[in-house]
Image (tube, rainbow, N blue to C red; front, side, top):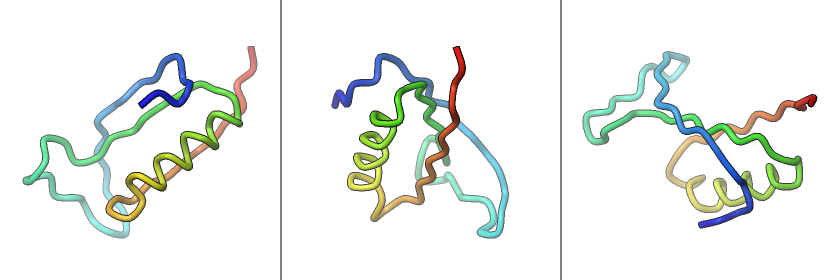
Length: 69
C-alpha cells in the first residue's frame, strides 16, 4: 500500500482510560501510534484508508497539527 507518504514512524503505546487497559494476550502488541508529517490532503487520504480498512474492527483516532518549517 502506498498512499503517498515519504516516511512515517510506528510506535507501540500503552495507556489507561474509560475503557480500561486493552489486553494484549492475543497480539504481540496492544496499541500502536503512527505518525506522518504530510499535507492536509494526504492526511485526509490516510484517514479515509485507515477508517475503511480498520474502522469496523478497531478503534482509531486521527490528530492533525500544523507544522511550521
